Image 1 (cartoon, rainbow, N blue to C red):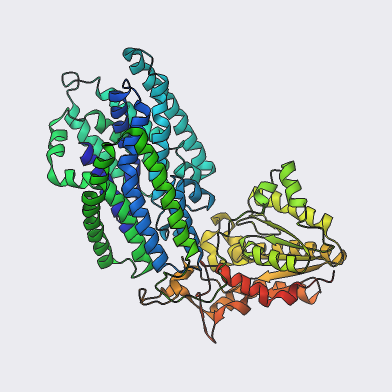
Image 2 (spheres, rainbow, N blue to C red):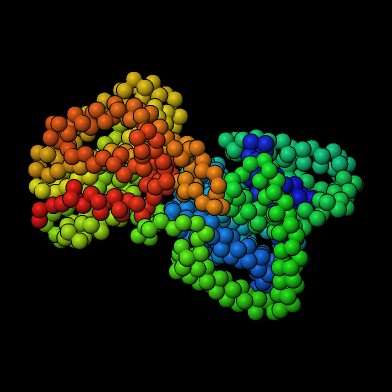
Length: 640
């Protein structure tokens, strides 16, 4: 029965990842796995808790079960990523860093830090996005036995009452945290083990309940089992927008099904079904390999009907082979060793794997790439790196405000950089340039935070932007330079109107927000000018609203077709951007600012523009920002 439920879960997950429109809620298969894990682990622990050294023995068996195939799959996936992903793209950095963090069971934390929503395009092209769930399981395995360890000295009868009570309490807190964070920060709600514990806990409580139930006391087991499985399947037809409801229903349904394991003819029939048992037994291998293969297909030949079928066939074949040649043999070998030795082997293996993958991924970066390597300078990292985030600044934290106030050195003049991620993308090269020019550098930024803020800006962006503005006005000196950069099309134009709150769409179309923004910018520029400092305003390069990953725009032998989203009509962009540029030009003619024209570095001919130098729809690839800043260095010259 358990293997049958695993089969249901893995089929749902693979179907969702191959064709999300056909099974939009198939990702709930991961929730099913969590419930099953809670059930199985509770069964294992309660059967061994009275044995000497059960804790180290438990960890050893878990490592023997998970680690060998996991490290093997991640290693192969890393080699494939190195081979087919442009080494100078942001996606390369994200993929390799996710790979490395997953080795020690921490990729879910990295994906949170990287702001990779599970349903976003960035995660779609990450070969190791799926490792987040395995890392959550590892973290659960690490802490869950401790509950039983502290109840070990109790009599068995008391332990059978206290342990479930503790699990129920923690699960209730976990569920409340899941619901709370779902509204506050969906990524934390989705990726963290504490917000997922309630799913494992539900499985655990199912086990404790199942041992108390007999056939005589449960006459309607067959009907209830059918209803619970159908309910879980129906939830998988529902969009991810309703996860707050579909996830709990799925978890409850699977928990009910687990309570009935062995008590109905249907459960026995499912247990004897050869196909379900086969799929269930290789479900771990399938889960590890399917996303790696699908992602590599996205980076190469693309995902269509035929390639999807091909990807599934390859996944099943590799899963069967790796299950027989890696998963089962390594499990048998390690289970024959002492627990302490297995744990040391795990530590050595993960450390060696981490070092080896780091050296291959970053030490030999670009050497194994199967495509054409552009002669960039090699700087590529997350745009969401450290810096003075106005969202945190909005909290008026004294120490954080002080951090944002301090200059980077004691030079006479300062360059200030402020804006959203379009300013942030130039932070590192500008910092390096100012250092060479013996100039202070201070940067303020907020993802999605237009500067100066407007009425549609979030509260954190408004408050933080106002605080940053006051800090700059207070500290700017004659001869200093203030650089402002924003993705203005996202806020002031209909070019990306679908991202706007519907209540403000009319204001975008009518130009009300455009007028409001430039009124605020003129006021800020006038103050900067009155202090005898200079303001440089960065204007957008050509944007590609439907583009997901810029690295796909380079045609390679393994990528014969370039997405149409990589191209845009130049006249169309100019027409869309004209109302904004007219206002910028008006402020330039008033002598309030100098224009740093991003259009100059867009890859355009007379009529068509290509996104070959873009990392996504609106940011330049990281190495290109260094070239742009180097080409613009005269613009940033300061007389010290």
